[in-house]
Image 1 (tube, rainbow, N blue to C red):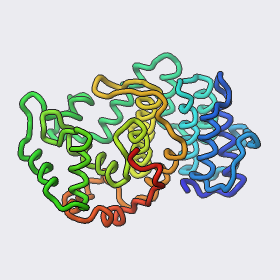
Image 2: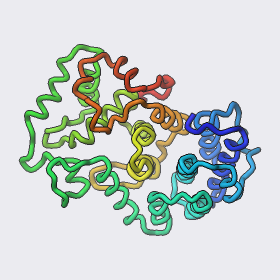
Image 3: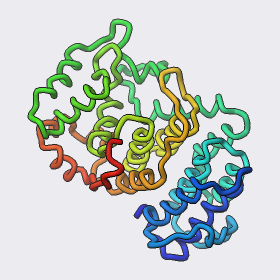
Image 4: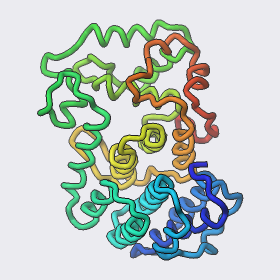
Length: 323
């Protein structure tokens, strides 16, 4: 479970999710029903959820039931997710989300970004999302402070290739089958991805932990898989999870909003059950793969399943794996 609430608290949170979703111009959709139901069973541990029976609380009513600020932050993040699953930005949903956030004294930057996005300032919203991703997941290897998000992500072009770095990653392909390192190399090879150090490769401070999350979590690199790995990382890594992971993934792969020329976009890739499962799995991780203290290279010659066990990667249902 993502949150350990009693039955009344859990159903009140789901009622708040229903309230945000129902505030939209199209009313409750089938995707809203699926998202709320899956949140109830996976994120909140309820055995059965009938969305139609959920009572929508007032913002103050929800606040009265929650006493820990950490729980309040996660609840508002869950409400933010349901505000985005309808495949379009809806200002009425965002306003309802903001009312709950105010009542719970939650003031995180992604709420301002969603307000920008739903009030006609989409360019400012996407710029902020790209910048936060760069700040929290792209440490400056060169010490330069004037690089933009794209330049920080892909620093090896224009003659700045690092052949020795690329060769070190390429050597993982020579490891035994079943090792983490061989699986990591195969992940790049099978998906036509360039290794760090290559002219078209991404900086290793980002791509190594990011793609390790794909490999260890078992998530594909298609649009659906990118949303799932964002939920997995967002729950694993505590820094700005909504701004740097979940909201950008939902914008890019579910709402069809490009964040930069480098990234793609797609509509409708969100799948509720797999999403909440990925979030739950990330929360249970023993290791933050983005922590500089995690030694990627010492894990490469170990069996993949042993690395998963050591990191606390919980088994995922077969239908969620690399599809």
